[in-house]
Length: 260
Ligand SMILES: [Zn+2]
Ligand SMILES: [Zn+2]
Image (tube, rainbow, N blue to C red; front, side, top):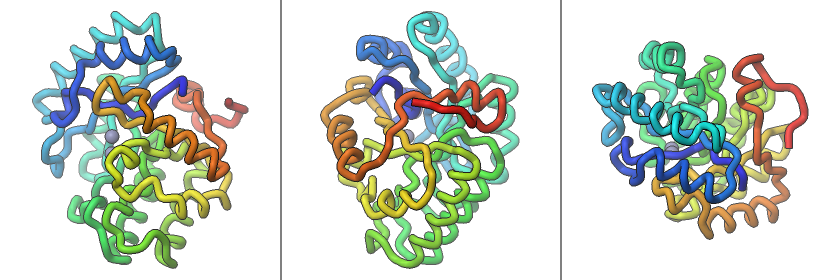
C-alpha cells in the first residue's frame, strides 16, 4: 500500500490522532498520497464533526498540510452521505474551503431515515441503492466508500435484490469512472463487509478497485488487517489500483488514461 484515500482524525469524535500524527505515520510508511476524510457534518449526524468545528478543523488541517505537504501529497476531503438538502453545504466546503476530495460513504439513505448499518429489508436496500446512484450522478464524489456497508445486518450475503441494486451502482461507477473501495475496517470489526459475493458479482463491470484502511487511529494506517485485505483481494482476483491520479480527474473531469 502506497496511498490511503479514506482517513479519519480525532476531530470526528470517534477516532484518535491529530492530522500530523497521520501524516507522520504515512511518511514513515512510505506512502505517496493520503486523503483526510473525516465524516462531514450534516443534519442526521450523531457523533460526528459539528458545523461549529469546521473553521478550527480547517485551520488545523491547513497547518498540518503546511508542515507535511512537501513530504507527501495530501488531499483535503470529507466522507459524506448523499443527502440532497446538504449539497449546498458540501458546495461551500468544496468551493470556499478547498475540500475537493469528497467521498461517498452512504451510512443512511437520502432521507436520512434508513441507517445502512441496520438495514434488513429489500425495499430498504433499494432505497440505499437509489441514494447511492443519485449521489454519484451529482458529480460531487470521487470515490465510493464501502458499497457493501449494508451487509452489516442484511440477512443474506446475496440475493436477487442485491443483484439489481448493485448492478445499477456498478454500472454507474464504470460509466463515471468512480473508484470502488474495499474497506479494511470491515475486517477489523467483522462487520459483514467486505462481502466476497458482491465483489465476485462486480467483476462483470470494468471497475477501478482500491483498498482503503479507513483508519480511525494512526497505528491502523497499515496493519495486519490491511495485509489480510490485500490477500483477500488477490484470492478474489480483484485488480487493485494503488495510486490514482485524482488530481487529474478532479481538474479535467473523468480520468481516461492509464493508471497503476
Ligand atoms: Zn464510512
Ligand atoms: Zn470512514
